[in-house]
Image (tube, rainbow, N blue to C red; front, side, top):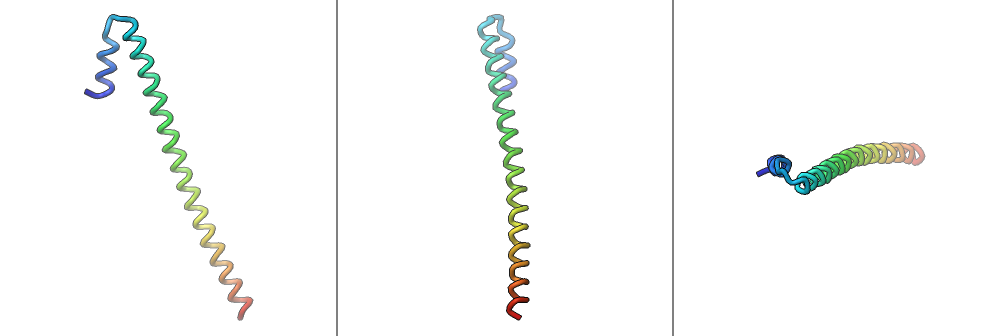
Length: 73
């Protein structure tokens, strides 16, 4: 049984307490999914930022080495 099936069963109960509990559970699940999606997005942005920094560092090292070669030669 998956989450949606379990929620359907809870929502079909005539007891208002069970229905309220199902509503609270659904809200928590939605919050969990939103938080997870935000975390995944933040990690993706962090990876892109790190790739840019690595590229910038490589370019800076190359420029340094070229200037060093010119100064020595």
